[in-house]
Image (cartoon, rainbow, N blue to C red; front, side, top):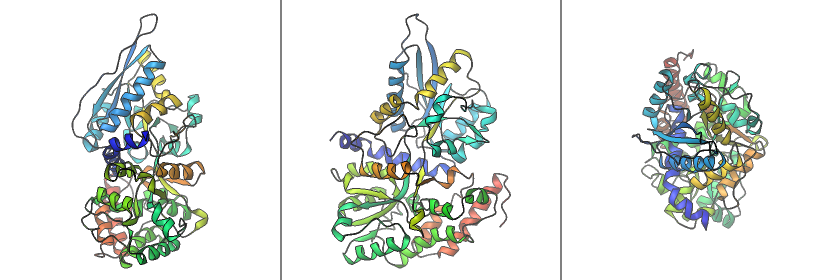
Length: 452
């Protein structure tokens, strides 16, 4: 099938991109460490006048493929504008380049970057062109708007689709055992007991890739916010903590529950992401707390099995508030240093990302992992089951953006702490206390008031 061929080629890219995005709250973006520059085709209008603008993206293979696809489509619709695609390293090096170029007035005319907590340090009011007055913003998804708005001003258009953090599950195993999608943690544990009784590992963990340990907690944020809608604000202000707030502490307790019940795969301490995907796709493991975006890697590990995998949110205490934690698309921004004809061309290019033509082009560059963040866009019919499941929760309004898009504080040691809890080395209570201390250091570095 067309989509499976594309996913086989893009699988490793998607997994790497997911890692970078998950780590955004720690100060990184997508991976890569070198810079390069490529130039797309040059065209001109009938008068012969062409406006050339530069477009800076990270140098991940998937990102570059998407950038080329979307600029090719833009050139077809706007022959009087040429977009020069430039690349920068990912991770912390890329963050520093973006901040330095903005502060020195040397930024590209348009650039791709994170939103949420990493957007605020760019000081958008001083450095970026707001887009509130643009008509195309009325088509944007609320989750994207919320994560790209600072002090009441919206600053970007969406780059690519959203994806969720929840539970990947093996559909044939669920069907064979007659299981229903759980909407509460109690139902999830009951399903897991039946799966274990059938000789299948109920829950896959892959601590050989340490970042993968975080999804039980990070993916549970929708449930935490359901109990306290302004949880993120209180958390940023140091007024609420993981160790003392019952709903947040339960995120850690869920991991402890799974370890004590013996529900993990035997190789969970050393297994890596690709091992987990293989166990999930072959049905030797039934459920994998993970980002939905990594599902593309299944086609590379076990070809032909990608649609044997579905997706549901991390279950909480209440079926009535069951919903998905999501990572919305990154943003496309214009610095205030872009002026004159270049500014007009940059605004045309920025607006283009909210159109169906742009989304269709992005799909050619990389298979979507969830819905696009504009009402103008539709997904192709041959998307994965995980993408369909993710889209369902978002379109039904049963989704919340991850905490790292709402709060600037995220401790750097969460993955290590959760491995200790998941391995039975620390209790959930001690792990939550340790993480609060980790966050306190981060908050102090940011100049925030955060009492112990």
